[in-house]
Image (cartoon, rainbow, N blue to C red; front, side, top):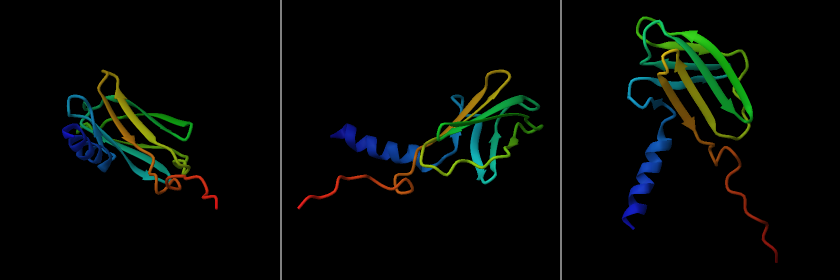
Amino acid sequence: MLLRCLAVPAAALAFASPVAASADGGARVWIADRQPLVVRGSGFHPAAQITVVVTKAKRTFRTATVAGASGAFTARFHPDLPTRCGATLVTATDADGQRAVSAIPANPSFCGGMRTPPVRH
């Protein structure tokens, strides 16, 4: 029972924000806009070369950018993020291996909700 009581708040916190930090708590990455796709990050090494990868609905977008003097970056992609239902994974990695990941789960209400079989009379 205690495990279940702890799991529900933990799950709510995990899905409350699409912004995720790196293991050391420094680097962060998030989707700033979906149409066109724009990813922002902060907490990276200043002037670091950063590879940004976004995956959703069996599509992968990849680009490279450079962090500014503050360690922040903005990566712009030409296509829009797919609107199909599916989880989104954003990863930003600099040349030294510093990484930030943001996992945004599929929203069940946006994806048509829970599917149930038709009721037979």
